[in-house]
Amino acid sequence: MSPLSIEARKDYWHGRFEAMASPCEVLVETGDRTLARSVIETVAREVWRIEQKFSRYRQDNIIHQINHADGKPVMLDEESARLIDFSDQLFQMSDGLFDITSGVLRKIWQFDGSDRVPEQDQIDALLKDIGWQRVCWEHPHLALAPGMQIDLGGIGKEYAVDRGLLLARSITDDSVLINLGGDLACTGARKIGGYWSVGRMISSHDQAVGLFRLIKGAIATSGDANRFLLKDGQRFSHILNPKTGWPIMHAPHTISVAAASCVEAGMFSTLALLQGAQAEEFLQLQQLEYWLD
Image 1 (cartoon, one colour):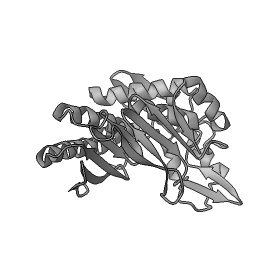
Image 2 (image 1 turned 180 degrees about the horizontal axis):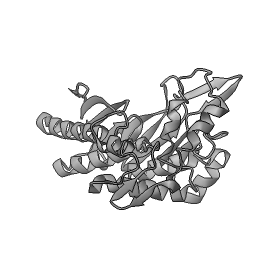
Image 3 (image 1 turned 180 degrees about the vertical axis):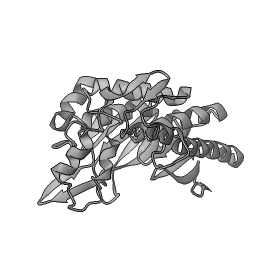
Image 4 (image 1 turned 90 degrees about the horizontal axis):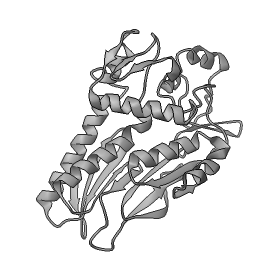
């Protein structure tokens, strides 16, 4: 776990920590240092718990157990099973474009800003291990074919934001904002000014361009601002099509969506990106507030 820092601002307390490969912050509108510390520490512990439980990089959690079961069914706890149910729902809604078995493509796609684009035969070798429709899922039992893996990274941060807010509400009625690497939500309006002002990250240099004024609900952002390849003048997004193994093309660089919960906002921002050039048309049909770049 990363260090946790807490400092007083003019009219709120500000906590910072690292999780899920992202800078994280918790803002608590209170003058009570003890209360603020309790909220910030509670949220940080929950985010770290979720990261430890669902990270594909660990060898001591349920994801590792599933990915190394060699075709045998694994019985999931209720929290894990709910996330798998949600992932299944996203697979159906996206016509197979949101697929938690596509993480194996990260073996050959390294979105580090370089020009290292894999060869077609490398992609073809991995496509045989991708396809949620090949997974045996009967709540709460999950069985992958040998060689397949799952990765819940596409919904993890948004889920952690909502879980953190739920715990924050159980501690205080004061306004709390949680921001995990640009996916954020708040418990309600502030007493002073009414809203939280949050910079929107849309460039490849971590610059804030424009501001959100968040009174309630959540905003989630998906895009390729910081994760991409560039070869022969063509930009390759880190959003991959699990059916072809190649990046989704012609999508906006960044999509931000506002919704009641961070999970809902993240769901629609990701599903929109997966539509490529039809991203805005998809969002218009959802009748949600959104921003494109």
